[in-house]
Length: 422
Image (cartoon, rainbow, N blue to C red; front, side, top):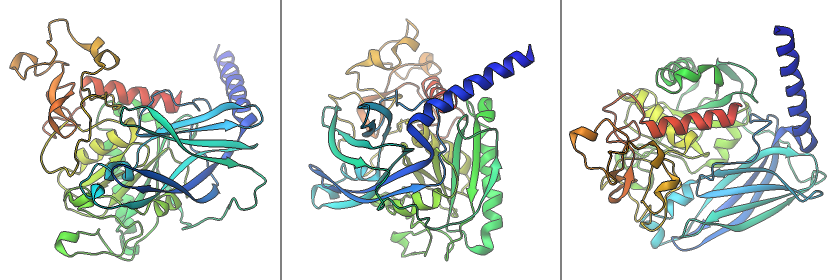
């Protein structure tokens, strides 16, 4: 019986790889572009096209079925005029567009999309959501494998080490951890922090129940300086990725606009998700869906920062809190359903978590003690006190008072794990 199972698995594996192999090589095609504009306009400009030596993604689930993200891209085989790959994602530019600064000036950000390397000519089309939440075509690029300007050149080459390996890159979620603000003398600390990151990730559900579905690798890349920029304190540190607190003038938001360096460094290992670990004690971090996640290594709340930010970057979860410190205006239009699985404006609640509600739970759900431990529709979330609703009174995507995700977030994370690994 065991032999029969092994033979069946082997045949499925061969068939799966053969299907992938018809269209792709086990490498990555990366397209860098400049995304520019202001609060009302956006423009795309091609920057660079290159190949990378690894493909860390699935060989099966090539077409995105979630419809998450502010942006989306599709890859079409030109010869057969067929869709062969797609993914949703968000970016720092998309967040910046909602700031007050974007109403006064224009800026440009370097962004990238990555996909398995096509064997034949392909058309890559980029989309962004309009104000009603619908994807509109914005930019296209015709890829030709014979184009000698597509560079295979490696940049920022560094070794990587295995922090946790469960299986092949095609059947696991592959996380690459990038060090930020660790000097050469602190590489030992970075290795220790990666192991600690791994332990913390698997101490929270649903990750602990899916430990065998993850690979985690760290890239050994030192910075000249230790720490990260803190502009309000006149602290400027020469680091490899250029992270900074006070991103968009929000003290705890620690991000980088040097996305090309992030991609270059991540390319040293196979990956699905990029996690930047900042060598700092100051509370902070950030994450953007299918872009990158950031957290500090030594704050007292570091474990929950890790988990909260990865919820954004990996599963597309939205923030369930609201306060006046976030520098966004009208981040979630009240007449549009948020794409994040754990937020709703009640525009189309049936497409959200309505099936998880007990029949006795009212919509919206008042913060009465009888409902505090139930899945409901609680007002306040997505940085707004009114009009945006969250599924639980509290959750790791809201505060750090508890040690677990709500039911909706847990289900969303598990769906994403299955997408990457099955």
